[in-house]
Image (cartoon, rainbow, N blue to C red; front, side):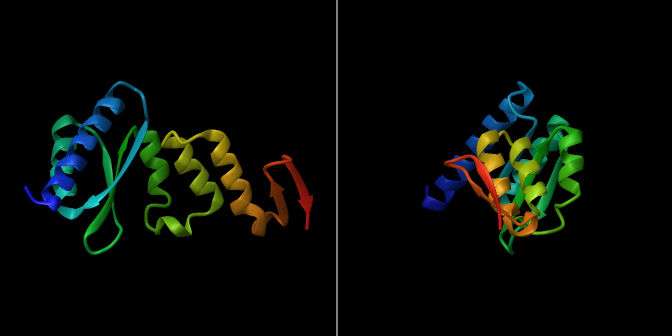
Length: 132
């Protein structure tokens, strides 16, 4: 087995575990970034299990695959047409929250990313705002 095959096998194992967690209600939305070949295999599996998903091309050989609850996917559809690095602070916050990231860390990230928009600087250590 080549290192590339091993990496794909590892990705597929992780993907199966994420389906399990989704089915058990651990997470309402899952995001996987993978090669196009793995995405085809995984989309087939999601179709077989009746799980909704969205594919977002990242590059010529990589895809973001979102799957989960309809309400979460509806939100993702509002910004899936653009690359992740250009998401607004609010879109980035919503995505992180839906993916189950630490909510306090998401709040801090939102404040930092919003500084230019809000005209405020956020000091996480002192938990205070200063108008600039």
